[in-house]
Amino acid sequence: MINDLIENYKNDIIQKTQELIQIPSILSSSEHPLFPFGKPINDALEYMLKLGKDLGFRTKNLDGYCGYIEFGEGKELIGIIGHLDVVPEGDHWNYPPFGGTIANHKIYGRGAIDDKGPVISSLYAMKAVMDNCHVQKRVRLILGLNEENDWKCIQYYKKHEELPTIAFSPDADFPCIYSEKAILTSYLKMDYSTFLNKDLVIKSIDTYGNAINVVPKICSIILKINPQKITMDDLVKNLKHFIEHSHFEIDLYKIDEQEIKLTSHGVSSHSAHPELGINAISRLIVILSQIFQHYDIPIELFDFFSQSIHTQYHGESLGINFEDESGKLTLNVGDFYFKNNILQIGLNLRIPITVNMIDIGNSFIKHTSSFLNVDFDTISYKPALYLSKENKLVKTLCRIYNEETHSNLEPIAIGGATYARAFDSCVSFGANFPNDKDMCHQVDEFIEIDKLLLSCQIYAKAILALNELT
Image (cartoon, rainbow, N blue to C red):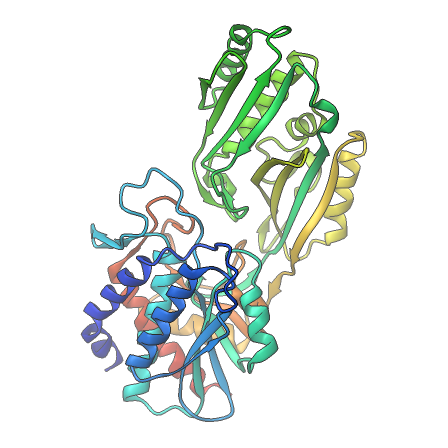
């Protein structure tokens, strides 16, 4: 019966997913007290709350930090935790990033799989259950707005609202996630002020809004020379030499006789899987280290990077090549900027669940100790999530997936971070299917329509199963 109902909702599910994608809900600055994450993100929240109300649910806006859509009665609360914010769109899409275009039986657009499609899928799963089944618990779809950054939305929710008794987040993979690696965001920093009078200097750096949890696809830098000491022709000749020998894709553009722009190109991927991408920042820094060394202007930050990090996705050169049942440690270089005479390189690490954070910090301190001007600062840390594979929530959700797909799969561990780690008795559950390419944060992000509908069926059955769980 549930599956037939969801088939009847098919056109609405597709249309609402398209419409939600068409709202460019990227984090932006805002001084409006009710738009803490910017108006576009607030527009996405208002869209969802109106849709929820039109479908017959109870809704609430929590001061623009987040919102929820709910039905049912009872003391216990089943939570479904998704998010409406998205990472920047990037460039070179074949489809408009905020078009919600349908092609090849897929819906394309930023947020299609992360996490707008799964949020719509979850809402219509709730609709099917609400209209046709009796439940003894309340079911609440919590709508986060700051997941791609620092989770202020969920922090606000936890301060002001009831916490779910049991929950899942439709923001990762099927069949079910029992473990998520810890996440460390850190910066390597160097004071550049003593280099401002050199014959070759950095004028500006641009990463085009790349999020630190994304492998950067493009990065540019403008260098300026003292033409009395270094000629532009000589600089161009040497840069071309280093680039050709590296086999990196880096373009040179001579602005005038004193300034040149270098633009490094890579391939974007989620920072949980940096080996699937090509890091434009890493490649650019390697060339910068070589060119500054050539002119006897060594930049310690660049030299340390080239020796100890470079393209080492798993931290081998730093001596942090840890691995356990949750996978290998991974490292992504996601940020690079020059501001107030400070050079900074941002790192995003996904750390196996059994690894001690102190070991990571000690390794960085050890390897930077011989570089007197390089500092290592931790910006944020998200502890790992771990539930036993025998946990009743994990087993129930995995069973539902296997029944609906005629599979026999075991729960898995991931390097990504979801809202599941913000709550007790919560795990991630879909909406990526096994063996599907992970399109989160990628150019031409999409969700397959058939799998969008199948996930809706799975979520409806999961709600019913969790309603019976004691």
